[in-house]
Amino acid sequence: MSTPIMRTLFYASVVLLALAAPLLAPAFKTQMAFLWVMIVFALSWDILGGQMGYNSFGNILFFGVGMYACAIVQRDSGLDYFPALYVGMVTGAMVAVGFAAVLGSGMLGLRGHYFAIGTLGLGIAAGEFASGWDYIGAGSGLLTPLFPGEIGGRETFFYYLMFAIAAMTFPVLRWLYAGRFGLTINAIRDDEDKAEAMGIHTTLYKTAAWCTSAFFLGLTGAVVGNMIGFIDPRDVAFTGATYGVWMILMAILGGKGTLWGPVIGAVVFHVTQQLFWTYLLGWQRVALGLLIVIIVVFFPLGILGWARERWPERFGHKVQQDLKPVQGGK
Amino acid sequence: MGILEVKGVRKTFGGVIANSDISLSVPEGKIIGLIGPNGSGKTTLFNSIVGYHPIDGGSIRFLAREISRLRVPQIARLGLIRTFQQTRIYGKMSCLQNMQISVPQTLQRWGLVMNKIPAEDTERAEGLLEFVGLYAKRHLFAGDLSFGQQKLLEFAMALMIRPRMLLLDEPTAGINPTLINALISRLRRVSTELGITLLVIEHNMRVIMDLAEYIYCLAHGELLAEGKPETIQNDQRVVDAYLGAH
Image (cartoon, rainbow over all chains, first blue to last red; front, side):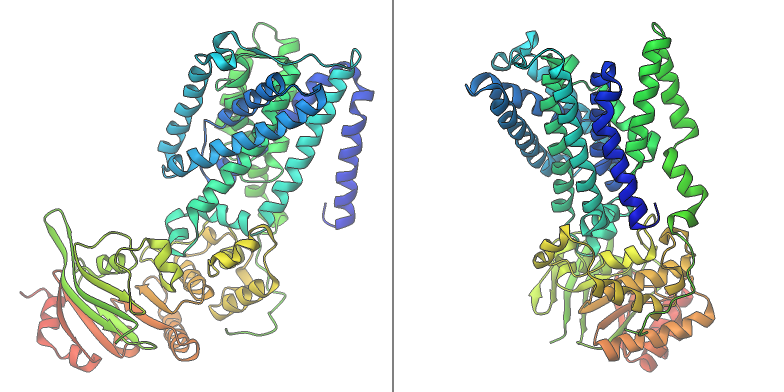
């Protein structure tokens, strides 16, 4: 992937493979759709957790909020299925961003472990709150509308929809990380006090980063609610113990703080997990737990993080004596 | 009227009086020294000036504007930048990235948030890295540099931001003696060529006597003496404070 041509070829083949996947393996459409969900999970968690050094255990909140907001729009707007779904998705993303903006101003003042614990509380509180609120179905949940198309069309449709979201998330983050936004949140990760002493608008950037994360999670939540067809407050929407933990795990497995790490982590994790469910039924949770322990103990830096530590030159971190700037001094 | 005017500043931590009625004036474009034995309150005074903690009394004016109630980033954006005694850089970013992010943070540049780093920023960053002798290491993680090199990087980052005034907390600590001479000449060039005012805490007497045009000496949280380097050098109270006589 050294030259632009190689890179373009690589991306093009990934996109082609993704587009052809439902035709190549029609039996696995839903599993493959969830692969894209996992990739968005890991990528969006990594904005704060990896790039900014704020380990959030409550990002699942935005997923659930997006899911509910979309379902409410679909239930109450009176629009046809597809317009209601699209309006609902946008609403879900916007409401999630709103939550991030409001909560961020308070929560992002916390640092380190305090932020982690605080956000953990947020996720749990949201689940409890949703299961007690009648307007959104309380504990008995919400049904999303039936998909109008022919049999099998539903899976194909949601596969491509989820692929579209993942295919939007990756380049947007790539672009953000390449510019001042990326450098700034990296600086906050490495030394927030120094960043403040250099005049950086830390609060503004931190909130913007959380809002970006919330946007993609809200969008994904809106789609996943419809893929599953039924929204349970604790088991589908605010699933802190499964999705909420997995998104962290996948980012760490692949290498947090890198662009490709979360993608690699999500693919490895999702495939492994599907294999466990198929071949170790009954023991799948034990195997998953074991996998988590192995990741944390042997790959604390993740797959890409480990590679970067081992071959720093391959990632461009080397002494370069060759070129001199045109003008020295100031 | 100096660029920085500190008047009657008082700061206590519980029962410990770290700064008591400190007044000093830094004229624009000059190099001013701040000396004193360990624990005399020099770094506390720096922290008070840059807004790291609220002061208990007195006033601090920068460019004729009261700054003692402003927060750290606000003061930094006025062009008053400090470096840290225990050097602080962004360890997991390359040296070049450390420089690229250290630009003036005005909201007019907010539009640049989404863009790539401007080429002129990169050029200037490379020029400044060359200036402190770190150009060849620009793609290394800043955290992998030696302590002295990190100190030089932090200094270059402070220049990158185009400050009006720099507060340097022990700029030569941990830097090898041959490099110290080079650093002194660089500090002078910063003052004369870029017109940046410097307030320097320093323990190395040879360096500060050579560099500063005027020196303030603190002891036990109080202003003990002030004057030109020659006057300070021959002040019996200063000598006593350093040697431990009371």
